[in-house]
Length: 147
View 1 (cartoon, rainbow, N blue to C red):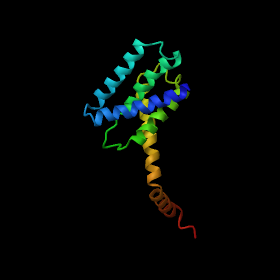
View 2: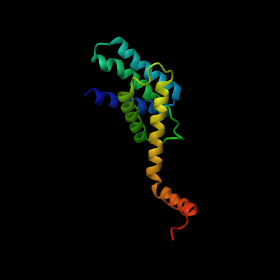
View 3: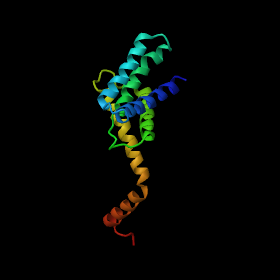
View 4: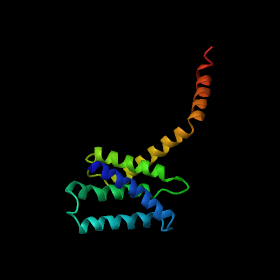
């Protein structure tokens, strides 16, 4: 159940930040800061509302995924990819959270990795026939036509 709540928080962190930034015209930095402040103050005021694990990790996941939501609307035009990136961020965070201990900028780097992976996968899926054709052309030029 904790994992489900964390993944939901990751999805909400990315999509809410993007919504506040783009649709409420607050700007990416202000949207991320405002939402992160609200979540942080909530867990500061009510530390025992949820179990200790969630009280510790929910604000961190939200702040990290709010970095994903700071993406420009020119770069990413859809909530689906934001939700996938938020879920991917959370999955990586859950499995590798101690790897990043002691490193400054770990949440931003992890957000970048999750967003770049999601955008790359979406690009490959949407252009798979074009990519296959280009690979065949390169293969034929490099190794001949196979005759």
